Structure formats: structure tokens, C-alpha cells
Amino acid sequence: STTTTIKQIPITMKTANVFNDESKVATATDAVYDWDSFKFAPIRESQVSRAMTKRYFADLDKYAESDIVIVGAGSSGLTAAYILAKSRPDLKIAIVEANVAVGGGCFLGGQLFSSMVLRKPADTFIKELGIDYEDEGNFIVVKHAALFITKLCSKVLELPNVKLFNATCVEDLITRKTSEGGIRVAGVVTNWTLVSMHHDDQSCMDPNTINSKLIISCTGHDGPMGAFCVKRLVSQGYIKRNQMGCLDMNLAEDSIVKNTREVFPGLIVAGMELSECDSSNRMGPTFGAMVLSGVKAAEEALNVYDL
Ligand code: AHZ
Image (tube, rainbow, N blue to C red; front, top):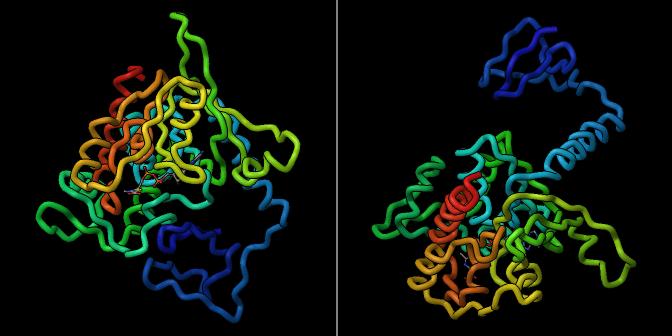
């Protein structure tokens, strides 16, 4: 059978049977479906199940030992993932996102007015992603936050060394004693988010684990799920909690980027989660600090452990 390409999707013509004339070579623009004789290639339901589950379980197996786990796939987490995975193809990077959809406050949780404001110099990252924007002097505007987050996410997922485990939440941290007698974070405990939400009304439901050299936590400010890793370390008395301050765009964005760091051995915090340990101000819907905090978290990760 002959293989051609329709909009970059390889189609085996004899099997797919989509053209009147199978000898015709389709181009991206002149593909014509014969709707009367149209038929998909046959499939058995179990093939679909196996196609998905064998890959998912292979990924679970592969990423059970990761170099870096990024918790939260909002704007800061996905930016950190993109920089790390692109610059270091040798690293295995697992992203754990509690929601089914990615985006956090950039898309899913908070972006009610479509367009997205980023203060300079965060325009450099938007240029790197190849996203169009309007320049308004000290800041730029991307026409829709969804354009930003979907493009960023697709660029992350195209990289071969990244796995996104969505609908999965981090419900605890793994810790280890260090040789110096201290404690460090050494991985995450995960579960299906819907299972995690029912620990109170069901008997113990076993979680899963990912061991890793380093965690980058980007779970946003406090909320039903937010600031997870900071709150867990606070509950153990390892770090002190300082609640997020009131909104001040100027103070907030500088402070978040400046404070992006390893807050506890093995745990870097980026994005708005930082405001819960440093009492940085809230910044509202301006995203320059989220992307540059993600960039800085990626750089810190490489510096801290010389990964
Ligand atoms: O679902 C959460 C979201 O997608 C996810 N998350 C939270 N807890 C998790 C857990 N396990 C796995 N235990 C978890 N995932 O983390 C993501 C956080 O995204 P976000 O957009 O909330 O955080 P961010 O710091 O990247 O961006 C903050 C955006 C905000 S909030 C804000 C304000 O309130 O003033 N301003 C900005 C720019």
C-alpha cells in the first residue's frame, strides 16, 4: 500500500480508503474525501485499550525514577519544563498535574478576559516560543492566554524526555535523611486526583511514587490544591509559612523571580507557590514573573545539583 501525507498525518491509502482515486498523490491542500465510500480502517476495542495502557504503564515504569519532577502544569511549571527538557535532553522530566487540563490560573482557573499581559523583559520568552504579541511599551499583550499555554504545552510535550501525568496529584513528599543528618526531599507520592479527594470517605487507597533527584514545585498560591509542597513542609516544621500579601503588581513580580530558589534541600519552588513561604504580594493577571520564575527554577535546578 502507498503512504502519503495529509497535513503531516501519514495515511496508508489502501487501508484508510479516503480517496476516490488511490493513485492520486494528495498534497496538504488538495486532499478530497469521498464521503459516500468513506470508511475508517477497522479496529477492535481492545486494540485501543492496549494502545493507550501499554504506553501509559511503560511511562509509569520509565519515570518511576526521574531526574526531575515538576509539580503543577501552570505557566511557571510548564516554562520550567520547557527550558530544562530542551536544554538537557539527557534528563528524564516528569510533570504531575492534578487537573485533567493543563494551564492553572493562566487558562483553566483564572483567565476570564482572554488576553494575557506580560511585563518586559518576559517578552524574550514569548519570542522564543514564536508567539505573536502587541508591544505596549513596558509590557506586551498576547491575544489569548490559551494561545500561550497551548503552544507552550505542545512544545513541552513534543520533547522526547518529558512525560505529563495529568489528572494525577502529588499527595505527599518522599524524604530521606542526608549523610550530614539533615532531611531532603527525594521524590513525590502520587495518586489519581479523584482518588486523593476521597481519602476521607474510603479506606486507604494505595498511592504511587516517583523517586527523583529534585522536585520543582509550581502548584500556585493557596487554594483547594495550591501551595501543596510548601504547606507539606510547613506541616512538618521544616520551613515557616508566611501567607501571601495583598496585590501589588510591581512588588509581587520582582519578588517572585528574585526568590525563586531551593527552599528546602531537594525542593525548588517557583511561581505563586513562593508567595506562601515568602509572603510576596499577589500580582493578579500579569504573567511575566510566572514565565521568568520558571526559567530561573530551571537554571537553579541545573546549578544546585549539577544534574
Ligand atoms: O492544578 C494546579 C495548577 O494547574 C496544579 N496543582 C496544584 N496542586 C497540585 C498537586 N499535585 C499536582 N498537589 C497540583 N498538581 O498546579 C498548577 C498551578 O498553576 P497556577 O497557574 O495556579 O500557578 P503558577 O504559579 O504557575 O501561576 C500563578 C498564576 C497567577 S495567580 C495570580 C493571583 O492570584 O494574583 N496571579 C498569577 C499570575
